[in-house]
Length: 225
Ligand SMILES: O=C(O)COP(=O)(O)O
Ligand SMILES: [Mg+2]
Image (cartoon, rainbow, N blue to C red; front, side, top):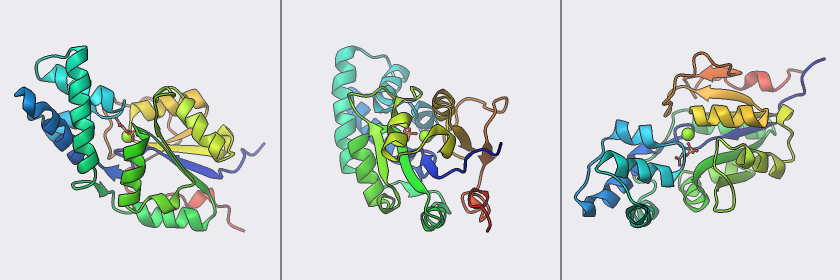
């Protein structure tokens, strides 16, 4: 039996469509600075990304002298304030992302974003980076929903797109995304140039790619007539 056609592509955001770590680093360091801590370098910041901003701040505190619940609360608030002001100043789309999204739209696939970034900043950043018009739905972290690798946010994204797991591909850059897709029963494509912090070479990914500008990247999703 031939597998059902893929009609839906859902993307992770940080480290997949955008190189956002420099702005995350700047906001983290702005939040740590009043404590006399930091700065945290870019590679270390990248190793903290993937489980949401609460974890990013917690890891930043743990790496610079330790955390308490109170310290975490106030530092997270400072981080979010700084990130709201400067969420895209240093952020860039990976080369080749926009033409791929244009092509996928013209091929009438439904497109979504499923990220652990809080939903407000995620939408704002997608607006600022010119991504929003391509997407039918953008699902970010909200207080009422567990974070990836729980499959709930990916299930919610598919529900909004009326897509089944068999019809869907999830494109991400991290082990968290891989585990999310596996838990949801969705094919996973790994972008290898993002913020991967665990070796996935022994795992089964439907595709691995390192170049968004490859013109053939998504071409086999559309059957030739
Ligand atoms: O906010 C994060 O930690 C990561 O966000 P992502 O899910 O878009 O990679
Ligand atoms: Mg990511």
